[in-house]
Image 1 (cartoon, rainbow, N blue to C red):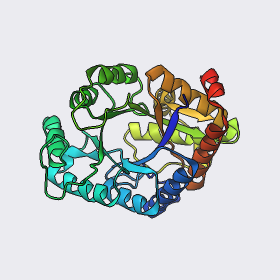
Image 2: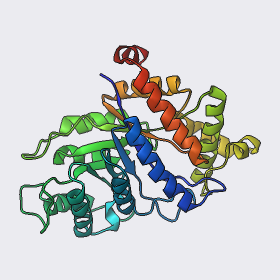
Image 3: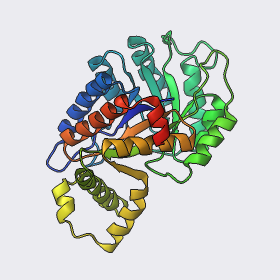
Length: 322
């Protein structure tokens, strides 16, 4: 079976570019992702960040749905502790009514006190008519597909118990990925009237380029940005030349070595083989590719190279390469 590829877009802001540039690039990327056959396109939520422009994923998702025709668009994810379930239900009810069958509602537990997160998720499901009740007025005929996002076991068990979809953030915390996805699948309780959930999705940070040297330069840019962020310095993504000329401190190098374990880079052939192998190792059929780059053109090129290579590889060859 061919591994499906999707996009997790964080609207990255590169050195020398603006937040507006990053959001415009997200629209361009969604259109290209649809053209190239990616399964779905998610946008993330970040606040007060010089490096990410996506502060309102539900607004950006609406713009992307209006700018595309077929691809499933969603949030990866809305930080539910920041909002009332009623407001989230109304927003996604409107989106799902306007674009039936194309809306994914991905939810995260970050962004505020999370003690009542499970109760908020259940209430949101009820408001959207996902629990068999009438829900709020104006519940869409085809509700959005609910996904819980996580980087540990908590959301995995919750998603399984609710019979909803689950996506694991390998790029944030690869260690518990296998355990979390297994726990999710073992705890899934199908709900009457809801589509049976899949085996889970793995979100992986990756960057592809035409040569190993170019891919290495793009990867070093990402690792410098990530190591700085880990050490409390939140900046736009540096250009490859900035990373090349940077004098790494011992702490930065240490953080880059750790973060590098969760970053896949190389030629399209190498990246694709690694993503297929990760999918098999974790028992998933879909990988959401998260690509960061300073220059929006490098990011678009990375996704295009990967999609074109994946489309050209026979299923048998892809399985053998894994």
